[in-house]
Length: 370
Image (tube, rainbow, N blue to C red; front, side):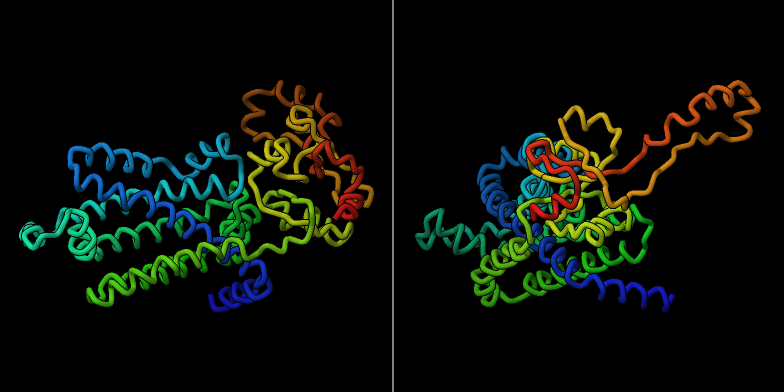
């Protein structure tokens, strides 16, 4: 166990630059979506506290949005917003809405009626009662909702890499694809630590006294905006072109590592699921993608396969594998499958694909374009 832990820390030390970039992106995605969720959720919570007849519909809709599986929600966003940060931010803010709206509603409606009556008797307007009485007294409950939304966003943001939005999910999905435990933990440990750190910080803020809470409430938006800006810090991407590679392709010698060492390919790369990368290239959101040279989407999206003149991609040979008991039950199957001998050797050949508006013939030409 100790040896495994040491190897994890060594891996994280070796990947420290990439880990820092992904952590900054992760924090940025979390807080960009949180800012928007607060801007939308807080007024909605105040509205339904004032007009209680609207509360079942608003809370019900927010609850339904949160029950949608996160992968499905991201999939729904792709046709509307494409890939990258935009659909990830929208999905995250939708997940954050329910706790913010519900806790704002609960906090305001939970203020003692006699306190509000006393404020009105002193001549306060409805607006003054809201900002000087209700919101300050409801602030601990509201902060509890923001605290919950923050922790939810930290967890869900790991899925952002599925649609090329970056974040710590790149290590997690890469590790799953390569069966690399160290890589999985390199993404999972920082994500868990971020959730614990933000939850602890907001819990301390939530339980502070009212006077300090008012001061903190003025500073908190500035801190949140600063954290949101972390997403834009890793801006030195190093080239004019952007490549979208699958997690497995990123970590293989017959993949991105080979392209870097043999061709000197150092363009900006992002991790993306193979389910969406072809369409992303077709829509000019990516310039280079990894894929299969026999994939029908190459022709459908008018993509060009680059020649591997330095032969970093070894030949892959496909073969049907059948259990003995299946052959005993269906003896004619062996003769039928043997007809495919020599006909499917290239069917799983992995290669590099390029948008047709770049007519370079080899990865080396792509590197020169950088």
